[in-house]
Image (cartoon, chains in turn orange, yellow):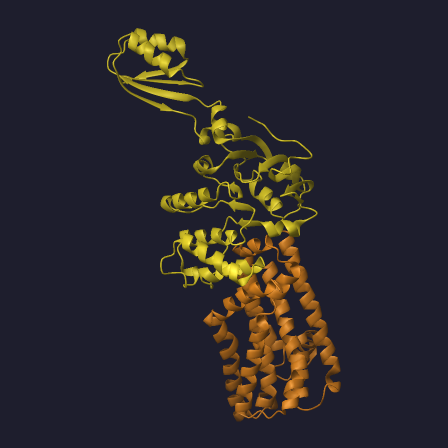
Length: 244
Length: 319
């Protein structure tokens, strides 16, 4: 249980940085309000609170990529990680310590986005909200996995540049603000080759009451990506620490 | 002077560290080249060498961060290849760069290390309190450490390495970047640990090694080229002793007489300077007095560790 000490430190590093809280919580909530207001005027299905809420929730996890990547990269570059590697912590302790602290934050993001969505008029049953976690939480895992890969391999400056591109890419290819089937073509193919659109579609369908059976294909994509990215995150971390 | 241990089975009872033909290669580049040394329990052992000599690689191997390409090392009897996890329980490392958690305060940083080493909460808090007293952070214990000065961060970084009460402590450039006062204070703290812990110190400050180390190993191109006590290194040095004698009434004949005794003699502005590997000061003074030379002042300079270092590694080091 030695990982708890390091996880607790990582938790504090995240929560004592007010910019993290503001970016990760307030920005998605603000975007949700903004697009819902636009939706009132343009009357597009995609801009209704019911459709926007799961999309923006998954979009908010893009900030988890940045947070997890920056902390890991900073620790690597500042020799703090080097110090930790000389301690009795085992590889599994590191993985847990750099993963677990983001779960409460992801839950907080879900809570804030759903609270704002419901206030704006989204109508979901409690059961469907709970069921939607089956796809929303693995999407958080996907993002933390990407963060671990970036944090293991890149410098803080590189992460800032690539992270911004990733946030934009998730926003576009996740189908959060647009109907991907209407756009069609190569854009749609790319979107559905990535996990974000599958995650958003699955969450929207579950919240609309279609049940899990109808979103099985989307779930396979999300779970597959979650496992692959998480394993790649672990491998990147181990590769980089072994070559220190 | 080049007394390098080369035993397969060292004195494990008294040795904290033993390396056996320890080598590390990266492709064709040899970072550490067959190092054999023994460091006794409670000894403060310093590793010196120019940049790229293999100091940090050696420390990384001994602290189980890197595996050697050849050979092995034993820390308190445990082999670094076979028992790295056991070794990590009994060592601690203060890295060259300050390694602290910036958003935590000093207390939290210390408690973090206690938790990582699996100490009981009571024991962790006891040690953290003791170390906090040593840290000299008046009124700033609860402040996030990213706001500390460089010296305060450095002291905390070293204190964190002492939280586990390690049997072997690796200090990599502990005073790098500190001002002279902070450096002196750090020396006192390290001196206070002498005899209680085995300490391996790497440093670029030769006077630091001279003041603190029981023994010094000098590395060049991955090899130990000298290993001894600071005094013995200086005594065995080929560097010159020098003496400067200020006189009033020295004649050319007297200077000629001294030149017959020593080859390196300079006489300028009533001051005679003599350099030799071994100077017989009594003989020089007696000679001057017997010739009724009025001596106004004498200053003598012994070879320093800097001289020894430059002599052994060359002016340009490895670069």
